[in-house]
Image (cartoon, rainbow, N blue to C red; front, side):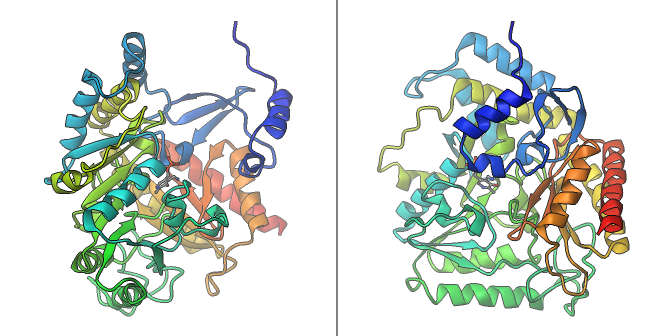
Length: 457
Ligand code: PMP
């Protein structure tokens, strides 16, 4: 009979045999030892239950061990685990067609990978081959992967190494209307407004013009009129649920295309209904990308990634051989296919909109009450709560204070995430099956964690 290892043994092995960095990124002073999950809940080895508002970083989309998805996985595991995709087998084709049906024309050609980094690597290569150009632009604060190529796209110091990773990659100022020099209320597409007034009129926006001005300055440092691609997350994930002024992506796409580039939407965190209002985050910006990359929520936590592009770009790429052993694995495809069905049948996207909007509105009330909550933002169940020393300075709340609130929230049974360029933003991106009652439980816990921090400081 299988028996779980003791906590002491797991910790010993982690210290001795695992990547030492992973000791740091457990974050918690008292680590959480997870044993089991069901829907929005996780249980530790001692039987304590946690409300999971981080979902393995926006990855468990429809719920831990969702019965329907689990059944699809088991059914496929019993039939065929793997074969190379030089053969033709049903799960890959069923899923390719189903995934493509979730995209508008001409985004219809699907490539399978095993992770978001791989999908973005592929997108970099594809954009360069298709355009014949080399320069790629991303937003500061973004995370697009940890492979040597995608590390060049990622623009967050915590994930950088001193290797030649960013050849041809440039970053532009993130159009963050809270921390950036321009913008405020009305600038972004959110059910709530920032606390900071913006001089722009509704519909905006001067702030947008200023951030676009920054992008034009970056163009001036690149090969003239020869951009290969612009990569952007519809809402920055690791960067702390950062949202841009309403027309920013639309104008950026236009300027990039004028310079010969293609536009790439990284939907690794924002796809599959997470933003509530739309199935894909890019649709909330009223833009049409040339390439879309996805992973995480695509298979509810089973390792998988994908890229969708146009037949024209796919034709340019077909000049070389692209092979990926596990890309399109039958089990991954069967799971991902069941995830799409489940999203439709469970009303997951609508739930993301309803519970997410409720949570955002309630969090905004806390923001108005507590001096250390600077900004509450996001859409659907992609939410950021940016913590500050005080509202006037907007300086990040120090790391020890963040950790105290984080630890206390966990001790009361709720798991959230931390992110942002300075680690100053709590991130909420739960399995999209959470209820309003779960949101209320979190709000009560979070309020208590804030109060106890403030009493002690
Ligand atoms: N893009 C985004 C927006 C991400 O958040 C991540 C992972 N945090 C990636 C790409 C890379 O995905 P993976 O870890 O599956 O390689």
